[in-house]
Length: 332
Ligand code: TYM
Image 1: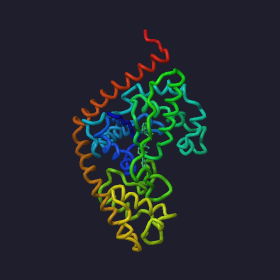
Image 2 (image 1 turned 90 degrees about the vertical axis):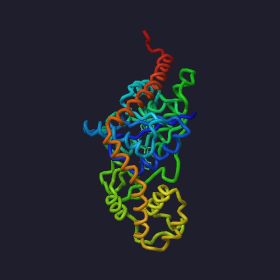
Image 3 (image 1 turned 45 degrees about the vertical axis):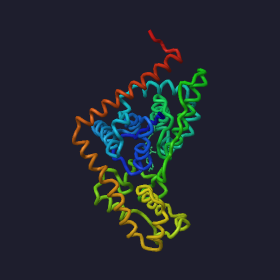
Image 4 (image 1 turned 60 degrees about the horizontal axis):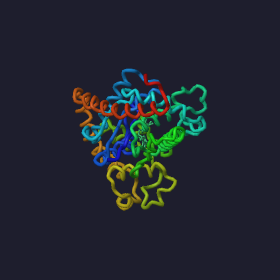
C-alpha cells in the first residue's frame, strides 16, 4: 500500500485553504493509502507562540483532521514534537544541505523580508525540518497546497544528496501531490495573496470554526470589483478576486464553473455571494459540529493521538536507526 505524509502548522484557526488545499485531499486518499498526518508544532515555533495556546492549537489541529473526515483507523495522527526523531534527523540532514538551496527558498525571503538579519535561524532552516518530517516516514507522496511545492522539492534534493553521499537508497524521493481546483485559495480581501491563518485580518479568510453568520458576513464583504458576474472564463481575466470566489465555489461543490456563468453571468454579485455563502455554511457545518463534539470528549481524542504517536514512533525510530548506522554514529 502506498504511503502519504502531511502536516499543518499548529498556529490556530485552520482555514478554508488548509481544508481545500490539504485536508480534504487526505480524506480522499485515505482509503487507498497509509496516512501519517501530524500537527507541526515545532514549525509553529518559528513565530513566538503563547505556550498554553500552542498546546491547545496542536490538539485542535488534530481534532480538525478528524472532524474533516480523517478516520482514526486509517491514519496515524500525532503532534510533530512528540516524535523526537524529527529534530534529530533534522540535524543530520542539515549537514547534507547546502546554504545555496536554503537561500533560494521563497518562503524565507517572503517571511524574513528586509529584516533578514533579525529573522530567527529556525525560519531559515525550516525546510530541513520539513525534509526530516517527510523522509523519516518514507512516503510515496506528500499531498499539500501549491505553496509547499518548493519545500517538497528541497526534501527530494536533500534525500538525493544523502543517498549519493553514502551510496545508499535509504530515503525515498517523495512526490509533491497537488490535487483539485483549490491548491491555492486566495484571501477574500486581496485576490493576489494567499488565504492564510496568519493574516492579521480575520475577514480575509473563512476559518473552519466560523459560525454560519460569520461566514455569511465575510462572503458578503469579500472583495469583488465594479463589474458584473462573468458570463464566461474570458471575463474572469485580470479579476483575481472574482476568480478566487468561483474557484472556492467549484472546489466545495466539485462542479464545473460553466453552470455559474449560466446562472449568474451578467448579474450583480450579491445573488452569487448568497449562493456561495450557503455552500460554505453547509460544507463547514458538519465539520464544525464534529469538531465541537471531539473537543468535548478529550479522553477519546487523547486516546486517538496516543495511538498515532505509537504508530509514528515505530516508523520514525526504525528510519533514524538505519540512518545512524549508515553514517557511523556510535552504538555502544
Ligand atoms: P501550512 O500550515 O502553512 O499549511 C498547511 C497545508 O495547507 C495548505 N494551504 C493552502 N492550500 C491552498 N490554499 C491556501 N490558501 C492554503 N493555505 C495553506 C498548505 O499548502 C499545506 O498543505 N510547512 C508546512 C507544514 C509542514 C509539512 C511538513 C507539510 C511541516 N512539515 C511535512 C507536509 C509535510 C506549512 O507550513 O503548512
